[in-house]
Image 1 (cartoon, one colour):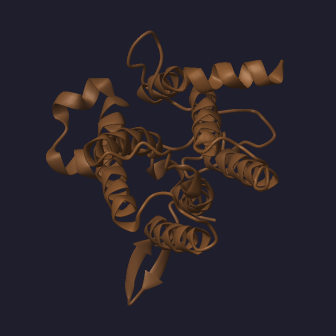
Image 2 (cartoon, rainbow, N blue to C red):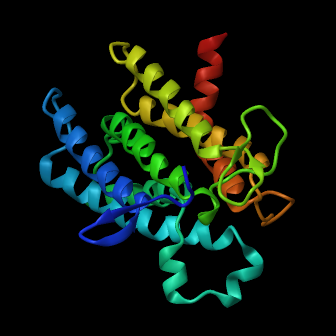
Length: 245
């Protein structure tokens, strides 16, 4: 496979990444509506629409902001176009979380609303990461050089950690976990909180094998985002600890 991988579309060369990003969005939305049919949603359709809008706008802003902070030394050299083009999933989740909570306060919804999105998010992420992997080192999602047996040449002639493949494996494990929890009685909202904790814990750790740029105290913007999520859900973490005891 040659990185970045391109396909021919109507006579033009198109990055495979664009194709998988589009498929990920379509499949995620369709899966959400499919799963929604099988449950009694305590949130009305109109409020659910407002929540989705809040999530999308928050994700749009958060994904760009955290991506901007990933390279602190380049902030002053960024243009509006480069800021819009650069994005990160972790920032999207964080911004989406803020967007949802803000909209819910405005429309007066106090019911947890995230559980139904967990499986669609995992599936969409997995599909999207195929596209990220196809870009090799042309997109800043690759790992540092390594002599580890899984090291791969991602297009620059060096053996690197295939971080996107690691994340795809992690997402498969998350999918299996939440399928096992499917029929378990859990507090409304706990599935989404568990997903956020596990995913951001993974992102915190995997940053150490990526060529990241420290933002503060030798931690990247994504790692600080992960720490924020851990603090944000501290009550849930304490509840998990008490349950485990």
